[in-house]
Length: 351
Ligand code: CP3
Image (tube, rainbow, N blue to C red; front, side, top):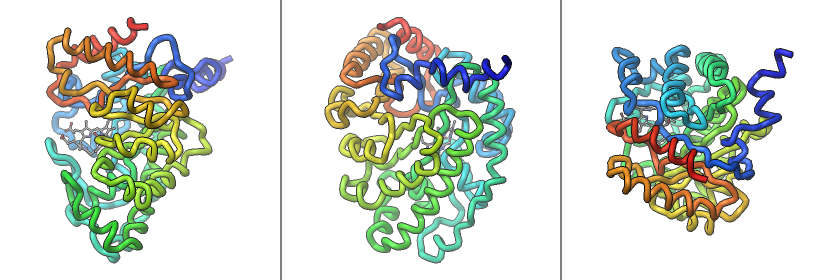
């Protein structure tokens, strides 16, 4: 019967290694994918993107789908990650945000006062149609390879809105959190709403797992994270919990926050390169899977150096209930993509 061969049915009966690992059932071979696997490290990506603005590319379903598929075909990774950006729901709500190459998201009018927050527009669910379409196209092409959907966590999104662009320590953002807690709560509630809707659109259209990126949470104290940020990350994920797909929570420099990030209610935590995985497991316990944590700097090291690092990461990952191999952050744009393919081959051959 036709419907028996639909990918989602196959996955329910015999889940792919990635989904098993996220759920805590350790597969024989460690699944591997790379944050920012789609992007400038691939010549085929650079070629497709010529003349198209980043956010316009994300909103063109055929283009977004093709870019998502490129690294899966090339590297044989265990998952696709949907090609989009954390600020797409901000743009779809009608806020003037663009992505400046080499820099990141930039806003014409930063959001800093109670009045600014009150005038943030709602996100019309119909605006998410190109996202749903791109995911559906991609899932149909991927067959049994799972697609990971994602969204920015409210704190990381809010940091772009308040600062008006990328920022090292998010000083204005963290000042607002303490100076005007009501405006802060309203801003993070708005971010949770749009980002939760963005993630839900991807999962409803066929993505098999969801990753929440709180990339800049590492600049927060544990106390601030727990009181002023985690409740809103949890709120964002409440939008998708009924779908019962595995959820992953990642940030950079979040060694001190890992247990609190777990407690937002996820199946896996992403770990950057600063903390060895066995130490991460000591902090989060056996109730979650760990994902990580190749140092992106070593992608440019001679292969024997990178191989020794890979073996170390895989061995330390055995402390966890299950491990998904990834980088500690995204693929740097100048990475030699053949190195990524070699990592996938090595990990798949390593039991
Ligand atoms: O392959 C994938 O991982 C999927 C695609 C993806 C992109 N952005 C594509 C992208 C994902 C998951 C994101 C999430 C994202 N966007 C995050 C969280 C992940 C992280 O890196 O911590 C953040 C913080 C953003 C905001 C953002 N968008 C930044 C910092 C940048 C980089 C700016 C630059 O040019 O270095 C972007 C732009 C962006 N998003 C690019 C890509 C491929 C580069 C744009 C280009 O190719 O011109």
